[in-house]
Amino acid sequence: MERLVIIPTYNEKENIENIINVVFDLPIEFHVLVIDDGSPDGTADIVKRMISMHPQRLFIIERQGKQGLGTAYIAGFKWAIEHQYNYIFEMDADFSHNPQDLLKLYGACANEGADVAIGSRYITGVNVVNWPMGRVLMSYFASKYVRTVLGIKIKDTTAGFVCYRRQVLETIELDKIRFKGYAFQIEMKFTAIKCGFKVTEVPIIFINRVLGTSKMSGGIFSEALLGVVRLKIDSWFRKYPKKQLQ
Image 1 (cartoon, rainbow, N blue to C red):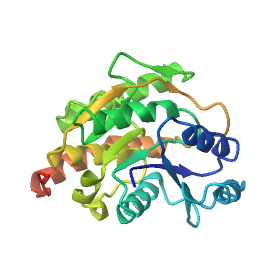
Image 2: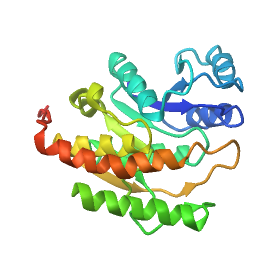
Image 3: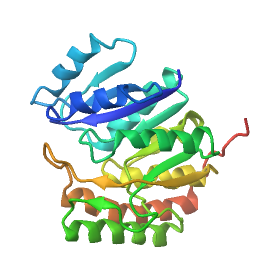
């Protein structure tokens, strides 16, 4: 099995059917795993109805209550490893990530030698549509701050549109990933680099959601700002597993 797109959801009934259909219409085959955190709006019911039409390509993990983005992805990563997918993608449900760009991320890993490919908003300037200027500046300078503190070259450190080769997720000690919000995205990228994997950025245009409600909050943002300092200090004392040549 080749490619799995993991989509975490909480109250995404307006988007989930459309995003799955667009992924399934791509010219190469992707499977989709939805991780739903007990959405009261019936998101999971929509997915389960669609599974009856796509039983070999669409899957769901239902969890009780909002447990955080990071734990959703960790659950998805473990499922993907167990089911032997070679390329595992993170993607939002709300079309802020264009599903067509899955092809670019896949190409960077499958054909261009990357172990991790990041859909980057900032690799060619600032490619964000429909965000208020304050949000753009906050995100851009947060990424700059993270780069400086952690000493890494990634321009979009909080990006949530990513392709991992399976070996990366098998090597990173997933149970040691501690952050749950946007700091989770930073921690995964930093850990992949510390393990010796090649991380590359692919330019994308990020479009703010049209339907549904944003999950961003001040608490999530402050976790990222404080988390990177802890991440850096911990890295001085931690021995990271290293990429094995295959």
